[in-house]
Amino acid sequence: MHDKVRSAARVAALAGVMALATAAQAQTPPAPHTHLARNLAATCANCHGTNGNARGDMKPLAGLPADKLVATMADYKAGNLPATIMHQIAKGYTDEQIKLIAGYFAAQQPRK
Amino acid sequence: MQKHSMISDPARRRLLGAGAALSGLALAGCATGPAAGPSIGRVVVVGGGFGGATAARYLRMWGGNVDVTLVERNTEFVSCPISNLVLGGHKQMADVTRGYNGLKAIGVKVVQGEVTAIDAAGRKVRLAGGGEIAYDRLIVSPGVDFMLDQVGGLQAALDSGRVTHSWKAGPQTVALRRQLEAMPDGGVFAMSIPRVPYRCPPGPYERACMVASYLKTAKPKSKVLVLDANPEIQSKKALFERAFQQHYAGIIEYRANAELKEVAGNVAKLEFEDVRADVLNVIPPQRAGDLARTAGLVNVNNRWAGVDWLTLESTAVKGVHVLGDTTFSAPAMPKSGHMANQHAKVAAAAIVQLLKGEAVNPTPVVMNTCYSFVTARDVVHVASVHQYDAKDKTFKTVPGSGGVSAAANQLEGRYALSWADNIWDDMLA
Image 1 (cartoon, rainbow over the protein chains, first blue to last red):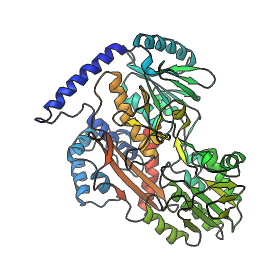
Image 2: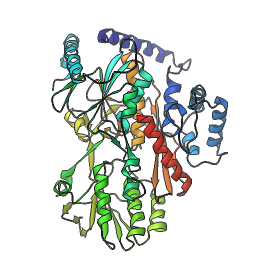
Image 3: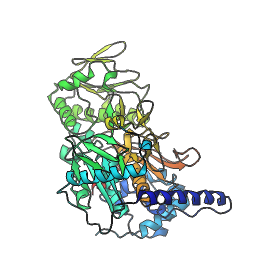
Image 4: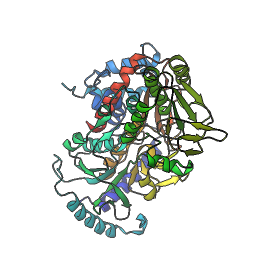
């Protein structure tokens, strides 16, 4: 069974580390959370399928080269691509977030 | 119910042990998952809708060896999104119904049943009929329930079957469709919309369009009367106004500030007039689901459940995470199936980290897309992206992002149906 006490101690220790990290934040931006790319990419899954494996008329993103997705999203943001909805959604994500998302989808296996 | 803080850790461990034994009995015979190695913890998910089913699936995908039990009272999932097309005769119930076998296949224990109480101190849920299931973390995703006492006579009218709400898809969808089929040509379909906030802001206006699309062909002398308690259309206003005018002139009549006070037979009583309808559909005022209330999770306006947006953990009861429509929404965050799915992923990611004693993602993002049919093929959307604001500890929409369709169009009609297929897969596979 999961050891609640040890777990609580680890959380407390982590909280201490996080407080130190916050103090140091003024100098260097914090490293992204381990699962940030995965979590961000999951916000796309409602339309583009789990891990980018889309069905129907939605564009599959699994296995798409990262630079291609980054460029496409930049074009959507800039209004350089015809769009129904993606020009509005692209503007909600920072360029850094889009890079992380693109990297995650590039590493996914397209469903056959 | 005992409060969590009153129980010491050793006492809680003893209770957990007892709960685990009970759950072993309750779940004997259920399929076990394919995972190997020791479990990192037990998560019970109550409610198999857009929030709960997504959470169960992503906990298994992201958690490795997380023991996940989903408790849902229905045998199948019936989607509210797309169900207005059933009312319009453009889709069948089978098109909006999916099973839970996909979740079972990835190792989620699916228990058909109803949770009647949460013992947050003992970390276990009680089932109707007496069983108990122990958890390390609990997810509650009960959707909305109705404030029927706010409209005189509504409870009796719904009980009699004369009036429908059809705001939870399933038998109520079928009942309203049958009433529409039985309505004479020249009849009046009246629907009442409650004050915001309610589940699915554009849903009522889509429903008006879908019912009108059916009547326009099948019973062209009929009327659709929209009685809105709000001062104006609450979502995609200009697009719906255009649709009412372009496709349903002479059929749809929209009335703002028309709050329903009482239902008597087939008469809807407003403040200053009585409206007689052949078919009366009342979308009741809404609040957090019943389970959230009985479990003490409702702590905002006596109506909704407050959550920590980094984890979706209740601000009222530790160890309990709340998803979807039942939460007190962040600013400009709609109560939608799409948003509940997004809540679920933030919660699933956070719960896996918490079970492992690791830090949760401090910068979550959620987004919403809602497609509404204005004809059988033409669709309009609204979209928004919400980034977590660490200073105010809530999600905020990104300035300049999001928006609505330029005009209703058939391309988005295809996207809307693909959206449904993809989100149903994303929650149920």
